[in-house]
Length: 272
Length: 272
Image 1 (cartoon, each protein chain N blue to C red):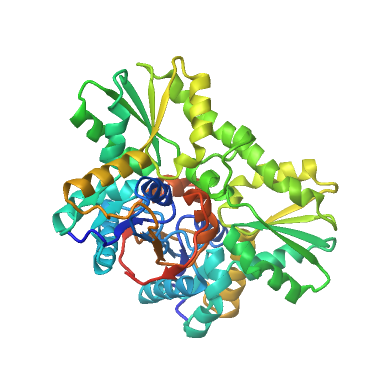
Image 2: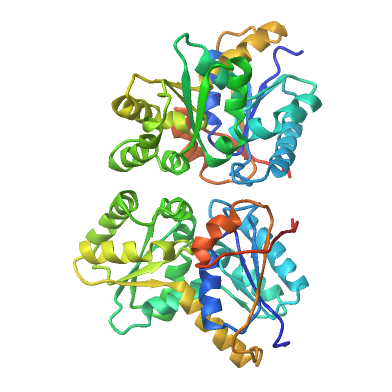
């Protein structure tokens, strides 16, 4: 594999930028190509067949760009399309579900994991299946929290409204038995609400809660895969990112909050 | 025109069901074909060219079904695509913007209209241009309220959270000068929040506010157009509705709240 080739990252829109952020922090010498399928966002409300078809379009686009690896930085696409993508792709394909699931059960004390995400991700039970395969003794509970995505996109991540919405969702989970000790953020938008979620969960849950998000776990997995396949770039910094979107929207404006730094040089492409 | 032919109604998803609801109440003998482009929802975040292309697909589908008229029950599609659709279509095409604008300025006392809607609709300034063309002396103010759509879709239309979000948005509008006397709901989702919006506006605005939504205005316009073109159905009740969607999602479940009655017999179609 060509070690100077870029790493491809795709998502239905901007949420995957939290994963890109972790990747850039972990692998500062690597080049990245980010594809946001903003013309067809969101994937979470679409059927499995549609999500697989769109994901294949995205993979095809990234392959034409000569990437050495593909990161599916989208929970819905990871849940529904990963096996298909891995079967077809000549380069490794890493999703967000498996690393996130592994991270949630990694600690010794983990007994019960509350999985919060969009309705689509929770309905797919992808995280729960991944955790059960790794640690059958761990109890898991899926808990859809659909309003967190629009709150994150609106930049409403602190204050009265996000706090009321967080209480609304987590109060039910706080009453569940057995008691949740680990909160897994199974949505790429949720890291923007990390502080609030962690704070509220630790205020209202009976026992201390560890809040886990999959972005840094994905970055570690990508780093390991690069080492194993001798595909890591030898530079230690100076990597660049090229951004592609399928529709010009507020990608740069909203994306900046997700990436934690300004975004420039976004190109619109037709991949349909 | 064939008076027994159905009336076609399209929207990007489920919001247009509030318009269909008003149409069914006003024209109980007519047959309707409702098309929700659920595979490509939402339109509000997409570029004008993309919205026009999708709207042409929708028009084409409805025409093949032999409709006698087309109602564009989507604010974004009405704002961006109506002139193109009207130029191409052999049958009349009615949007939601013009009737809503006319309804807002119809009352004698209307001086200042606050227009609330999605970011896309407000940015298009379509309602404001329509009102200025009809009544140049009326002052208009656009006010984006993006969180109302996910709240309506989640069925969160009363209680602490919707009230806090409503206060958050309307407090700014309440301070605006000149004082708003009319609140125009420029989004097909907002009728679900009508009572809350009307109540909060009349609690915090300095003067009484009339809250107007365009659904019933659209129904009146369609009724008039049918009379003028001698295309009204002669039955006084017993009309039926056929539903088509471009992706099978939670259309029936969520849609029921928008339509105000159960939805059955939804067919998935590929129109892309």
